[in-house]
Length: 344
Image 1 (tube, rainbow, N blue to C red):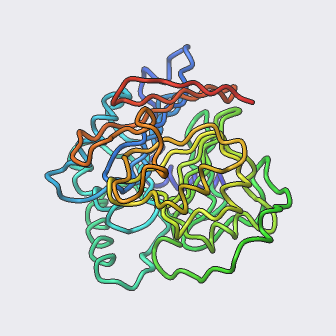
Image 2 (cartoon, rainbow, N blue to C red; image 1 turned 90 degrees about the vertical axis):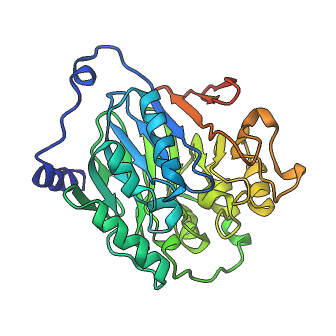
């Protein structure tokens, strides 16, 4: 599938060239991941060691371009002047809404998504139409589970899209999952959440999992009866830490070393989901983009692990730099504090 996706891109845009500085550099940089605060939406910027970039989602529309501006700040910090790929997990406003403002502020190469909007709601139809209009003239690829995004030096593998899931394990996955037996039955979800494009990003011994807003039934399809995903080093907690997502059978079986919750001050990071993540076997730390105002103190991490502790904030982000040996460092840009996690 990698070859097919690459061929599609060549037909669409004639190939994507690396910036000269990235293509000629002899110094191998780490993989960089920026968890950008878009107040309870998602905007995750990934910059490969070769200098190519992938933005997963774009935050909200409006707010005088707040979310696009925060993405551009992170891009400037990363030293990039264009975004090679923008992957839209699904068409809810807190994920796709910032696209029109983003394309006004920075050059974008290719948009990636799961295809047509599949939710019967007026607001989602409106946001999808605005997205389609904004990406006119850009290269556009609809991905399927099992495809990979052709970014040099890292593996970006699609796990879910449009409600479909991979059927074969990724490398390191496939073991029987003992946590499945205790999972209660969950209803199907007919919203765009269940159609999220989920990805696994691998750089050498480092593995990062981002399932967008995938909900429990689909998450369990990836985890049960066998865990198709294997273990991960870094988990972006699904659906901003909502309890509509994050079943124990997926979170615990993936054994994350570190988890990041891209919650807002009054959105996500529900106590039930937070506790499942917090109690995951082998977990070293949880980090949050915001203090969860509508939760309680027992279900928030210490302030040193929170990027924004006040509701009206500057939108500080969390930054990860990952090495090929699987070790990684997480930096809280609000305080400058860093913590390095070595591979077990």
